[in-house]
Length: 248
Length: 261
Image (cartoon, rainbow over all chains, first blue to last red; front, side, top):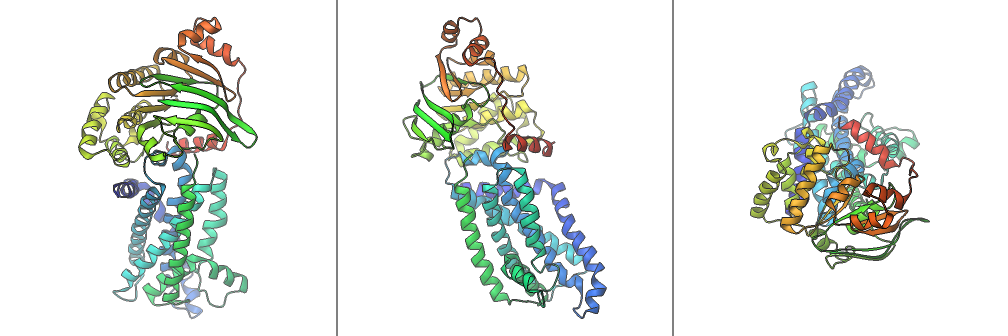
């Protein structure tokens, strides 16, 4: 138990001490929020869909959580060879304990980042539907973080080089974000896009966030909850398994 | 303390370690020397539970590192070729995490941390983040950390790479002192022959995955009819240069260096 705690603490402390990185990581979602939120606002309104800022805010909050959690896992790529992780891999501690501490740390950091994003959205003019919205949104943020921390761990345990990292970034992480309904409504999509978004776990996460925060849900909050929980369990299992198989 | 018999590690058709056998006695400082790609790091990885041998037997303090992983891990400390400190944390915090991971009781951990940080001349800097440390300080901290859980064996994989002569000297002085006071067996690799000559009581030279010579520095010199270990080494392994293609690890090493300033 001490090992889980100390590894969790390491992730959190590391995050709190790299202020520059925190600010940098908020930049991209903030840009989406402001450029798209205000830029597309008029068009979105004219199409009869209401405020785009309100619509896109849960999307960028989800984006923040997605990026933070998936990178906490993919970071294994260098952490296991050039970082502190190697020290944990030769310690007399089961791999499951290490992956648990690390994942919980990654999820905690993703939640803090998500919270910062909510605050920025509020500053930008976003207004949630009610007082219970935010606690409910936290539940979905945590599920998104668990899913993608698991996926990140699975990838980071197997990746061998930087080229692989670029591939994953361009052909997995960005598509997960763009085909999730973070930026556009999931209704009336072309079939191919519909299939892609329905198969994307982040779609359910963003939908859950949007349902909680502004009361607008495509799949229904319970379906979101069920799908995300199921996917989180599967991805965490795959992630832990891959991690246990790391050979240096 | 370490016993290796007919150890083989193959990657596909390539035998990185090809049927080697050797023994290291308790309390001994043992140097494992060889050109790049000779199989040194691969052997260390197998001894330290990080890699499964293709065949052969290994023993660490009487334990099979594959079958009794945790028991074996408790008995050794290791300083890797690449850094393995947490850069954002202080020297003290790095020691603390290590102590918790190795189940060192709190009281012992606090006492030993102070003792070791003082010995390695890092106590004054204990509350500074590791990222501000020089290469020599980082190495010293890693070695101090390796000693924290009172291991029976300490593995040092090219610990002096990239350090200036002062730091190298100081580092070996500390290692020798702990070897003497705590009786820790030391298993080291290095490319600096003068160090091996000075520090090690016994040496094994490995080349192309095979052990080509074993013995004390004096014996190796005698065997090859040379007057320095460097010449003995060259006589044993030839003077051709081993140009390896840059592996993905080397590429990442570059990247990480850039990224960490």
